[in-house]
Image 1 (cartoon, rainbow, N blue to C red):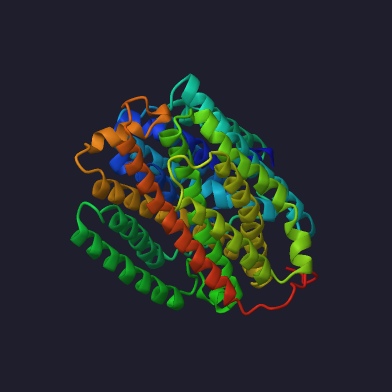
Image 2 (cartoon, one colour; image 1 turned 135 degrees about the vertical axis):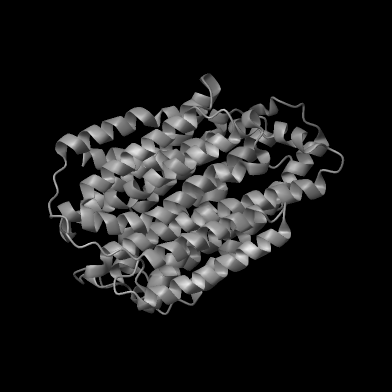
Length: 474
C-alpha cells in the first residue's frame, strides 16, 4: 500500500508540478504555438491506454502491468527532463502518459483486491489524501525548482520516486487472485477509440493552421466515435460496456466529472500564466494560487459523505456549479488592474466546489451500477476525467493562440511568447502586449463559463430526486 500511495502521488503531482513550470518551459523552448501539447500528449496517451491496461491486468495479473507502468512512467520523466526541444518534450510526455495509463487505474484496482467494501472507502480516502498532497505541494515544488534550479528538474524529481515504487512492488506485492488464463481483448473497440481520440485532438490543434484539415479530422473523430459505440454493443466482452449508461444518473456523473475536469485543467494551466505574465510574479508565488485550491479540495472532500446522506445529489451539484459559474464569469470582465487577491478567492471556491462534486461523482458512479461492475464504472470515470482534460487542453490552447493572432496587430508572435514567462524576463512588455495577453485569457475563461453552463443544464436534467440509500451493499 505504501507503493500504491507513492504511485498515486507520483502520477498526480506530474500535472500540478508541470503547470507551474509551464510558462518557463514555453519561453525556454520557444513553444507557445505548441504549448497545449505539453499537457495534451501526456493526457491523450493516458486516456487511450487506461481501458486497455484494465483488460490486460485482469488477464495477466496486476503486478506485471503495474510494474510495467511504473517503469515506463519513470523513463518518460527522465527523458522529459533531458528535453532540448519542444518536439522532444512532447514525445517524452507521451511516454509518461503510456506509463500513467497503467498506474492510475490499477491503484484503485489493487485497493479493491485487498480490501472489502467496508474498509475500501477508508483506504480510498487515504489514497485520495496522497493525491491531495500532490495537488498541495506540487505547485510549490514546481515553483521552487524553476526559481532555484531550472524547469528540467520538475521532471527529474519523479525519477527516484519511480525507482522506489518499482522496488517496493517487486519485493512486497503478492497477487491475491490468480491471473486469468483467458485473454479477451476488444481490439476493434481499442482501434476505434484510439482513432476517435487522436483525430479529435489533432483536429483541435489544426484549427488555426489548417482549418480544412481540422474539419476533416473532426469528422473522422465523429465517425470513429459512432463506430466505437456500434462495436461495443456487439462485443461479448466490450472495452466499455454500454449497459452502464442505461442508468441516466450514472451517465450524468460521468459527463459532469469529464466537463469539470476540463474546467479544472483550465484553472491549473492559465491561472499561473495570467499571474506570471501580467503581474510579473515568480513561479513559486504563482503556485500558491493553485495550492489554495488544493487545500480547500482536501478539506471539502470530508463533507461529501454527510452531504449526500442529507441532501439530493442533484441539488448539491446545481448550487455548487452556480457558484463556480459566477466566480469564473468575473474573470471574463477582469482588467489589467484586477485585484490579485481575487484569484485566491476564486481558487478556494474552485477547490471547495470541485472537491465536493467530483468526489460525489465517483461515489455515485460506483453506486449506480451492479456490484460486479464497480471496477468498470471507476475505469470509465477515470477515462472521462482524462478525456475532459485532454480535449480541453487542446481547446484552450487553440483559443489562446487564435485570440493572440487576431489581436496582436504588428507585434511579432515571438515577442508575445517571450512575455509569457516568469516575470516576463525574455522581453520587456508593453501595455499593448499586456492587453493582447489579457484578451486571450478572457477568451479562455469564456470557454470555461460556457462549459459550466452546460454542466449545470446536464445536472438539472438528472432524474434522481431522492436522497441516496447508503445501506445498499455496493
